[in-house]
Length: 392
Image (cartoon, rainbow, N blue to C red):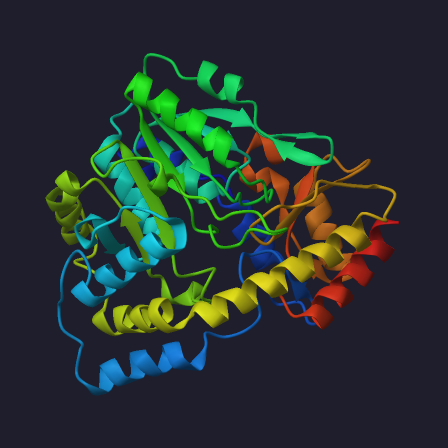
């Protein structure tokens, strides 16, 4: 349903809100969620519940009565654990004062938009991209300037000259999501260095969504802009416990910010949610300090799933698929199927497989389908059997 379909009695609602469409991912999710036997690959999560040791930490916190208001920026043990993790894993230079715990990575994105954007400010954004990210900009009255990824030599490719050329006098920030949802594109270190040099020269903010930062394949190095910029530079990095630790339903994320912005961020957390529940943060401490074997197993499973998807879907004559280098999605086009939403609904009806339509990720995604391959091997193989039959 179009967001503008609002009763006349609701006049006075902001135009940016009235113009917000329903998420096409949610639309297809609602379309097929009640259909028995459907294999759901439409959202970005696996099929395993959160690990027991993480849940036990939350349970212990509840037994200990940790149900009161707590630190707006996040409890000190979690902030320190996150700083240690980032410094170890990405060779970063992060102190605990730079870490803000948020009610999901998505909330961190919204707080970033609230912090930086006045109406009319432009954000140059690599597309296609998860629709909630673009919405965080437009809901604040910001203007998107999309720069598309394109397939070259079997890989997704970003033209940096095109990216930089789209930065005009109203540009406030560059937004980059790598590894990418939905394409699986990963920006390499040399390109990251060029981006850093450009934003420094232009005085722009760099907003980096690194939620899938651990999910890189084929022996590629794990990269972060945190290792390339100094603490007080114009860099905000968004992350989440959702993907790497199988905690999608917990809604716990974090941002790494310049330390001088700490009080402003604390204010925004206070005015939005008054902080994240302590028992959830205690679970996050367990995830970050004890969860490295879990993360490695998830990465290995996703890489094997990626290989199976490339092998099986790549053999279907009508399918055009670039090999994902990271995250846990395959983003593929089907010859003769330009309407991605119509195809996604048909695949629910005829194949019993739920995919996210590419149009959900912006104009650059139309004609594509996004498949999440972070599920058990047997279920993934069954989904690929069904898709191959439906698309042949």
